[in-house]
Length: 122
Image 1: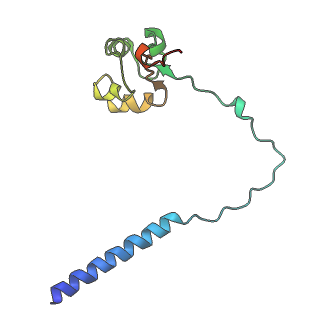
Image 2: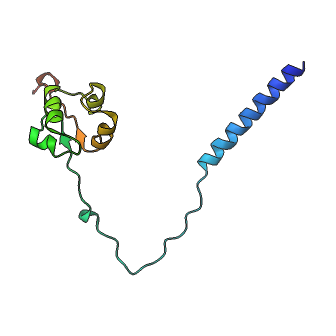
């Protein structure tokens, strides 16, 4: 009887804590009003725009511009084509986890459109 009561009490406490934590995570801290300054914000166009490199069509020289990509890695990337996603660089062991973290925001894996996927003309 005591163990059943203890189990029930522990479950009730665990549920109460989880609900309390969920509510605490949902609440947002108050946002302070922005201070007025005379300086103008930098225009968005001046921010450096990153050009993504397509690992399915990039040349060896384009691949070598990426951080951590040497001649050998560029050759491995080209030899492993086509890639369905950029994550295949990691799963096919073309690059290690650290190298992938450096590359994942700089590369994409575009897919060639197949003739079967195009709608028929009427």
